[in-house]
Length: 546
Image (cartoon, rainbow, N blue to C red):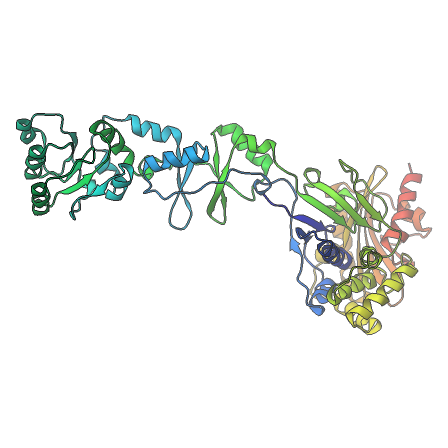
């Protein structure tokens, strides 16, 4: 079972989403929680790539969902066995593991078949098949192991050539008419019968009861090439056990096997189990068998654990969140619609960046922060506050950012210019890539609104693409049922944003910003914050229009 706790930001991750996840992961690990891992929900933007590369940090693990998977269930461990294992040994393994299904694998651990209790019993009950050793190509080692036997001479016999398995329950004068070449004869201490059988060309003598073999029999067996095995059991038990030397590869099921991957989702597994109703199913990871799963396992599955950073709205969260256990939320946005089953730590502060909160937690608890993580968190604060030009920026953001800059050893002014220059280039990007670069969905009353934001130092560089962006937004609005779809083109230099939008009612924008739009465009001087300067007035306008 996976014991990871994912620390994850929102969809279409920005620098704050990524860096706060990495930073909070370091914080939790330094407090002794080694199982936390930072995660992300999508491709990194250019700014974030620059930041991670500059400080030599690894991008968080990418995940697509936190729905329950096979890996989240306490599956039954299994010891996969090779196909040449005897059915007696397989039976012993089943008893020791309290299992009714074994997985049969090749030398690389890949699944060949399954062996169930019914496979073994059916084979054992088929006593009428006198050719079982030859058909199954049973090896001598299997017979020796199954019978707890030992070799008496140096002769070998290929049991795949066995014609008959015979118990010497006959008079001496009938041996010649009942025993033939390549037969296997189970016999007690009847030396004369043993000699006649060897002369008849039997392939193997199995001497029961651990009886001593006469020297004359040994010499004759060497001359004739007859293998002799001594077994401790009587003839009755030996005759019962010998068929249990058959390899499981001969009796295993190989067709219509249903197996599950460790990454398969539990809700999909349930459907398959309802349709097939087998007792258990092999579980595969990296093409190797790691265990088996049954219906009762699905009842005891544990939800994935997640810590949400830089968001607390369902529309922005990882898919499958309703099947996960949220244990913490660290955010600086408005309180959204995410619900939890139990009370959780919800650290929400009205400041400019989630990374400010994370860094403050280090400082407040006296935990040392690495220079690398300090640089990442400082970068995120610079990014989210537009180097303290955003109205969301607070004195705490400024103080924390400068403190982090000192720890990481950067010149904050020079570095911020480098970061913005690297991150605001829109060259070679498609309209769709630009629109979804930092896109968020909001539920405002009964309306669903989608707003993207692009921050750039070259706002005129995408003038040629604005009509294409407007067409794209119209298509998105109609396809997904948004009341309004908008894109903020934020000019860092002039501290303002041009708002491109698609809406069935342009009065929403007029009412929100008291400006008459032209051709679905409006310039908003001084507006740089989506969270504080765009969402609230649009929400108010939507409420007022009803």
